[in-house]
Structures are given as structure tokens and as C-alpha cells.
Amino acid sequence: MLKGKKIVLGITGSIAAYKSCLIIRELVRRGAEVQVVITPAGKEFITPITLSALTQKPVISEFFSQRDGTWHSHVALGLWADAMLIAPCTAATLGKMATGVADNMLITTYLSMKAPVFIAPAMDLDMYAHPTTQQNLDRLRSFGNDIIEPATGFLASGLEGKGRMEDPVRIVDCLDIFFEPKDLAGRHIMITAGPTYEKIDPVRFIGNYSSGKMGFALAAECARRGAQVTLIAGPVSASLQLPPGQLRRIDVESCQQMRDAAVEVFPQADAAILCAAVADFRPAEVAGQKIKRVGDSLDIHLVPNPDIAALLGSMKTPRQQLAGFALETNDEQQNAERKLQKKNLDFIVLNSLRNPGTCFRSDENQISIISREGKKDFPKKPKADVARDIIDQLAKGLRGGLRPK
Image (cartoon, rainbow, N blue to C red; front, side, top):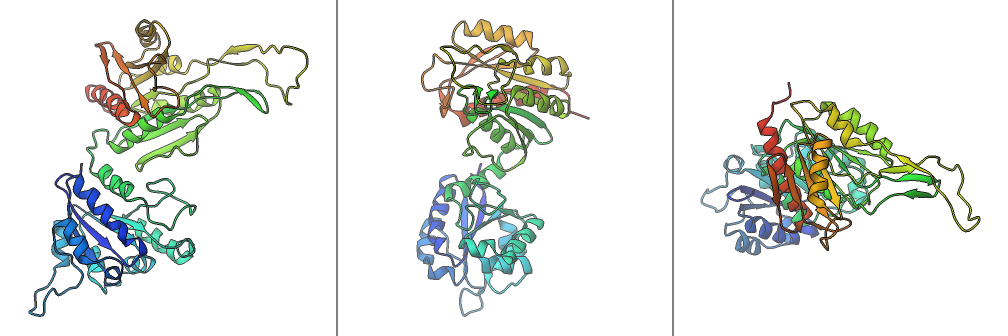
């Protein structure tokens, strides 16, 4: 979504300045036009010649380009750009931006900028953690700037892993996401993801192999397209993170907890995608202490869990869309079509354990989408691309429905 976009890249005096070459290369690869504005200290770490060779534009550093009175207009740059990215951004530059100390071309350009501004801090952790730096960051956020930090890879909070500049590709991803079409703007989407764990005793549970990757990919796709997202996540790896956007995460463990959260959120949602692999049964009784090994066998009496999809299907109003998942090992289409009708779903995503390298714990998936209009098959793809296909189907249904009052 960066094709044809005009980006002002500000570079400051940080050792991470060499990574600006990677940022430029990625922006250009995605079709953006890049104009570099560098501070005098930044030129100590990387030469303007290198940057100019990558952008095919002269690098701007000083107010006056020649002694004949020719000067660079920071106001014109502010009007020209579709976005400004300052990466790396040092503590000194953060302080000047927060307090309006316009003593170099980069700061004056920032103060004149009409387009959104993205800032990628780069400094050691002690400097980053200092209250002054944090106050400057908070102030810049209050001005509407986006702070791109590591840890989650996107708009983050807390200090762990901070200080170092975020990965160049992820920085460019943030800009790409910002310019993506927002066809779900104003919509509230609820998504369930991951497994549920049903306790046997304090140390054992009944669960499954679901990683949550598909549900998180769906949440990311909805957020990128402008939706307000509520993600109800079962126990998943801490490595699964979420992109920027209006995104709320509710962590649960059991089916009952997921059911309670879904029932609370769904009435306010425009749509829900039930991607979680919910346990169908739970132990009738949970032992208060670890069950000891006694004898040659152990019998555990199981009782049915609530059917979240059927419950939400009964609650669904004409303005809402409801999508489910069917993971089958046999009679795939018949079972999925039966579930579609029985649970009052608008469409169902079918995947099969018979497709190697898909489903649980995999980074790829191969699906079919079944609706009342028919069945559409898709090839094996990364889950991020699969999420796009699924959300395209959801968006089509929402366009045909009524907007919430």
C-alpha cells in the first residue's frame, strides 16, 4: 500500500543510522518515494552520498544548500509528504521534538509536517527508561505521533526489550498498515483463538494442539483494515503478538471462560469469527490436589462443554455476521455444511488434518469457505494470506448487511 506514497525519512545521530539504508531499500521496494532529512550528527554515522544513491534524491541536512541564498523549505516538505518517519530517533531529538527546539532542518520539518509522523527510538535502555525520555515519548504520543518500538514489533507499552531500534522491515510494515484500505472502519469484530484447557487437577488438563496462529492472523488482518477488534484468546505462546489498531485482548483458559467472555462481547459486535479450538468435554470433577498414580488405570468422567457457536448463533441478529471453523478428518464437506446450518453461521471455514503442513502449529493453512451460496477452495498459503481471504468473505457479508445504529 506504499506505492506512490511520499515519505520523509528523518535520520539522527545514532549508531543505528546504518539501518536507515535498509529502511530506504524496503520503502523503495514497496513503491514509495523517499526524501531523507538528516541531522548534522547523523552524517557522522552514515554519509549523504550513500543515502542519495538509494533514494535517487539529494539528501537534505542544512537550511541553506548553497552560499547564494538557495534554501530548503521545511514547509514545502511538510506539504509534500504523505508521512514522516524518524528512524533512528535519539533521546536528544525526542526532547527537541517534544519541546519545540527547532535548531536543525529535521526538527523544523517535523514541526511543519501536515502528514502523520512515525518515530522509531534508538538509544541504550537506561536512557530509554529515564523518566525524562518517557515523559517526552508520552508528550509526543499526545500530539498524535506513532511510536514504533520493539518487544511486540508494533505500537508497544512497557520497557522490556526497548531502547534498540525496531527491525527495519517491521518499521516499514507499520507505514504499510497505516495506508491499507480501511474497509472495516467503524466495525467491531470479535474473534476467538487458540485452544482451551480443561483442568483435571492442579497440574493436568485436557487440551489440544491449537497454537492460536490462525486466530491471531485474523485479528491482525481486521485491525489492519480499520476494525475495532476484541480477541478472546485461550492459552497461547507469549511469542504471538498483535499489530497496531483498536484491539482489545481477553485471555481465558477454559471453555466456560471463553463462553462467558463471548456472550458479553458478541451483542456489541458487528461480526464474530470463532476460530478457537474449544474442548468439547471437560472433567465432571476437578481434583483439588494432584492425582497420585494408584493402580493400573484411571477413569475420568467427562461432561459436555457449552457449545459457543450454537449459543452465539441463537443470539445473532440480522445485522450481525457469524463465522465458524470446522476441522475435520473425514466427510469434511458434509460435516461442515451440517455445522453451518445447525449453528446458524453465515459461512464456515473448512480445513482438514489430511492436508500435510497445515492446521495445528503450522504457519500455513489450506481452506475452503462454505456459505449458503456455495463452496470456494483456496490453495495452501501462509496463515496471514489465508486470513485475508477469510476477512474478504466477512467484509462482503458486512457490506450486504445493515450498519449498526
